[in-house]
Amino acid sequence: MKAGNEHKKGLWTAEEDRILMDYIRQHGKGKWNRIARETGLKRCGKSCRLRWMNYLSPSVKRGDFSEEEDDLIIRLHKLLGNRWSLIAGRVPGRTDNQIKNHWNTCLSKKLGIKKGIKSKVTRMNSQPIISGELKNLFDTPIPSGTNLSEFPNKNLCTNKGELDEGDKVITKEYGSQSAHGEVMMSENYDETSFWISSSADYPNGSYLVGPQEDHFLDFVCDIGF
DNA sequence: AAAAGTGTCAACCGCCGGTGC
DNA sequence: AGCACCGGCGGTTGACACTTT
Image 1 (cartoon, rainbow, N blue to C red):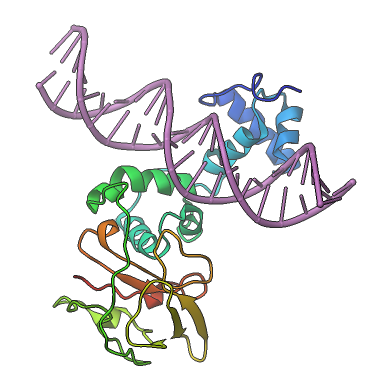
Image 2 (cartoon, protein in one colour):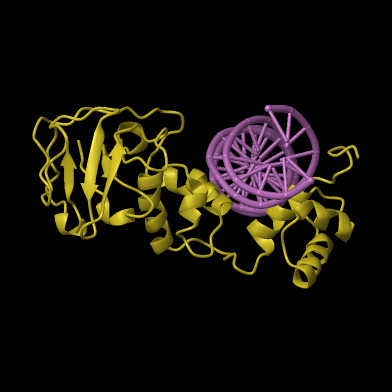
């Protein structure tokens, strides 16, 4: 089979939607290439999957993003970067594609973020960071008016007072739970790392220090230049 | 009214990792 | 080990709608 040449592209018609939905109602989703074949749709399996996941699935929420959703996405993006599927997993009813589009067209503009400017890690100050206490981690003061009570779990230890990219850090959160991570640039961090990002991604000079996944948002410390 | 410019978002593309044979 | 297939991801494109000139 010469895949590619004979697959239809472009917007889906109402009739194609109906065929795909009927099939999935009857047989369930998955095995998208098989679905594409058996429905007679002249689409590739990937296209069928995408259409279902991003549009036809009943779990997909349509319509404008609420302010609450915007706020959540902004906070998640600070923590996770462009990991749209992870962000979408925490925004009920929204797909990664919706969130990515919304970010690129509305939110990044709203925040004044320019594309293509790389983050850089800057050095923290030399103060040791003491477990159970929020310290100013950077060379600059915490802006007046910052509500520290918004960050209830701030137990952070470091193995030295001054951090740089590559340094190992330990956090303690949620009772006895602790985790190890590495200070990284935001666009490079991996699943297990904590990270520090800064600069152009966050026009007001925000820094973030935080673990992700299991520990999630409670441990975000947002400090200005 | 029409052309040009801009914004939005559905869909595509290439790549990657997992799985089964 | 190597291959094919599949699902999933993030970046990008392009059609269409809307706004401005």
